[in-house]
Length: 120
Image (cartoon, rainbow, N blue to C red; front, side, top):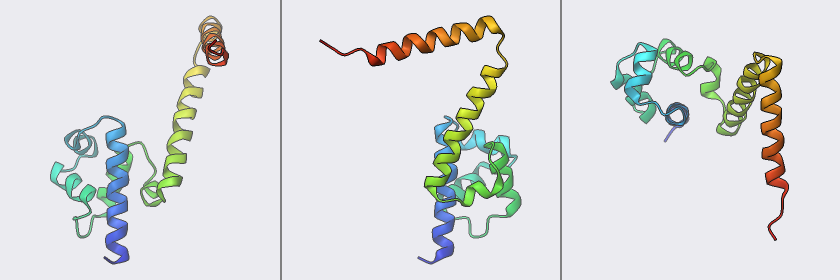
């Protein structure tokens, strides 16, 4: 298998991983990306001989990713996904009023206390 086939397989696997982590079907991703479901399937399986940058861009956009993220190594992609989730949480917290933020702090404090208790 040549480097191009490896790249196609890695990109396809990355798309599949992100899609399934979101609980999406191929049909749902295809609809959001405005592409045929068969195209998404072929790209995920690494059998689309020459996926266009447009198709890959539409998929990346539908998944809320930057185009270049499709080509990053898996470890880097996982780091980006974790950071994206952290940023989403921070963004949501910033939108809370003082009362709701106090409730969240109380919840986190109680949750943290549970983790610190030892069985015995």
